[in-house]
Length: 171
Image 1 (cartoon, rainbow, N blue to C red):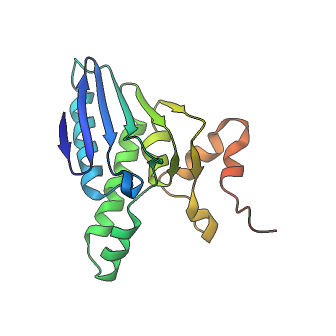
Image 2: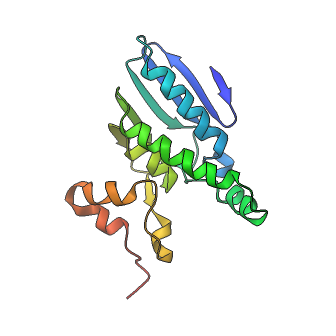
């Protein structure tokens, strides 16, 4: 098992395993995690011994609550250019997951919001537990959902994506 920042990578037989490992931060994504995931996915895409990738989170309350908003806020306060690089790289990772040439299986248990939706819903397979709580919170303040939300929300069966993207507090 290799560790890079707050995400663990392991090969178990023919499975490449990604494990989000920031339970205190609800497994929110930071730039290092995004870059490490991209690197490992590129490696596994070309590895003959890896037949599929599984992404999951360390046991806790969340699969992934999205991007690390605290880090983004601190970066914005000092106008750090890394903030823009994070979003660029996160969106590129989501695109790579969408086009990943092997099965990409997301195990969704607990809170799944924003960037957590991006690193799961763009994959080929999703397994959802009864504890999953889904949200695209940016829609509550009038923003369009990012990480490809305008693509995947209307494609959720039964038109459920419409209900995921409306603000229930407004009359």
